[in-house]
Amino acid sequence: MPSLLHRGPRVPRHERGAVALEYALVLPMFLAAVFALFQLGFTFIAQGLLDNATHHAARLMRIGTLGGTSSQYAAQLATDVCNELVVGGQSFVPSCAANIQIYVAAANAGSPSGSGFATLKTATIANNVMTQTKAAIGPKYDVILQIGYAYPWALLASTGKTMLVSTLAFQTEPY
Image (tube, rainbow, N blue to C red; front, top):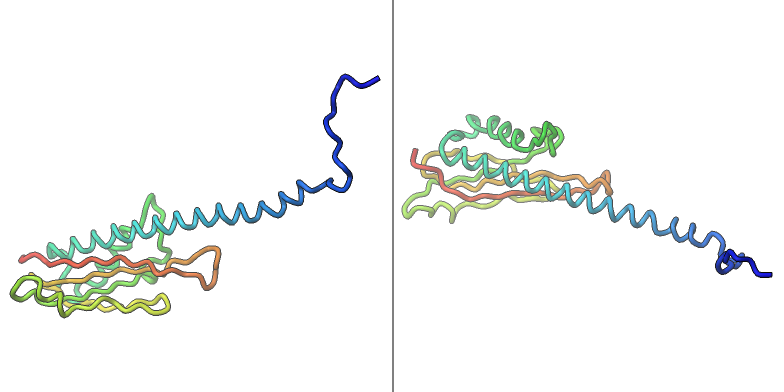
């Protein structure tokens, strides 16, 4: 007499453990993809914070709060940029003052206004290292400000880095 409880089809013996094997093969790839998405998200957050820090520093330079010779404003510029890279007490750039790279090129605006940009060059970048110079800044100067950070990838612990760079070109006020 047949049983009233239907137990379903019987699984042949040679397929036992197939699901566990498939799970073991797919799980590492799935976890790597999820981890890569988180890493990419953190990279976009770091780039956004770097852009905001560059805008803030450019504003301070534009209105004359930061300016003069490079020795007069360099330390304050690095401090202001590092302060902008902190969110909720957590910095997205560890050891910020040592790891942030700042380039400032400036030329007298001349006449017509903005003609100094023709002589300015952006920073050169090679092997995640950016040229770090800071030009003297005065009133009505054309300025290129670049802030960079060699962002480390967690998946490629020792060698994987991406150079995140934020660039702004502006003219200082006639303060």
